Image (cartoon, rainbow, N blue to C red):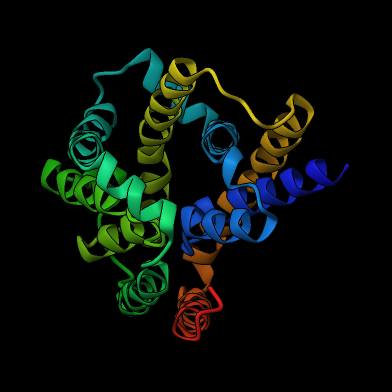
Length: 261
């Protein structure tokens, strides 16, 4: 029962923080550390990320169907273009970033950096800007490169790609939509790579019911988070998230400095 509860909580954390700009990986590092589930990390992370993949599919189902029917449409090519730098960075520096994620030594500073990115991006409130049909391939490469850079554990993927989209003059709601659609191949690719490692290692240290509960929780929470972010980009501000990750980063750095980490 305790393992089920922890998996449920981790699923909610993953679903919310994958799409709210506060870093899912950074939060999973924290919660797995507190819950003592480090040994279940890879397999659990794989299933939780699969849950968030399902969440994006559910929200943007019509867009995904159109992309499947016309994969060489302009939007499809833009997503492919943005995925290339993401994949290059992820595959090239995979081992390096895995070591950083495992120790969690830098996540305090990374949370602070995420806050700065969100704060400055939120000031870019242009009433006019590019919509999805006006995004250029240069925009896609730039945003995809930022998505690859967000492989650092406490640098928010959604935060960085939305900020990058705003910097490129894309309308706020379209920036969020492009960010979430661009996340689909990135999340699916990560799930496939992690699944391959699990198959090779053939080690699972967490029960199937806990995995299913965590995956379901991640999917539901992710669906809610995507809907919420679309509304926030239309009507609200990113600065509340910046303040949150600043506070979290300061607390973590304080714990590290006092040897309570």
